[in-house]
Image (cartoon, rainbow, N blue to C red; front, side, top):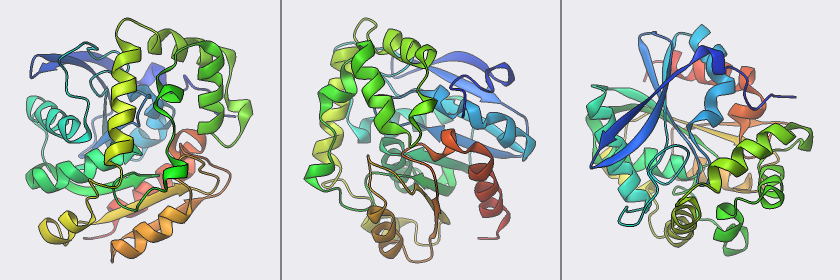
Length: 280
């Protein structure tokens, strides 16, 4: 079982403000290979923290960023919660941190954002790791998660959401539910997450980045990682994504749901290490 707070003693965290919006950056390691991790809708940067010890041991300098409206970032009216706005915002955060030629690992919403950054700001992104991602393969309407299921911060609904996220329900502990509930029911969180989830559902198919990657980044290395038991972005999407991105590499991780980097960090990091070690 993976502890939701594993690896927290290995990280530092600090605020960064760009575009008048403050976010939280989690950082670990000092390796030459910079890895930027982008979470999914309704989640936050520290979902990647259980993978941090193995990532640092593999030589990565890791950064994870809260999207506006998520985690410890600002949550208020007047913030644009569309995926393309998140892409512009994260690019500005990378500028503020003086980061270039990074590997971006984006999960779900984060994968759509990562692909858009790679197209919009090619100097920032060297490689893409797309994990159970939106914005590459079409998402069936029946697989779209209702925004309220993402935004509702009550313990009961949070437990149901986390149980849908992971393959093994034993991973959903009372401590994890309490923390998630407290963060996602903080002031402004419900409206922000409701808006972000609704925009994602609207744009999951209308903002596909496949053609843009073909046109603007035809040679960028892409690793697709999917959990075999993913119920959020079903694994059939992985094979469609692979076919839509010729030259990409697909890894399907058994025993994992929508968060394979959290559920099996060691295997995820091994695949990631092999990917970055392969010449473009």
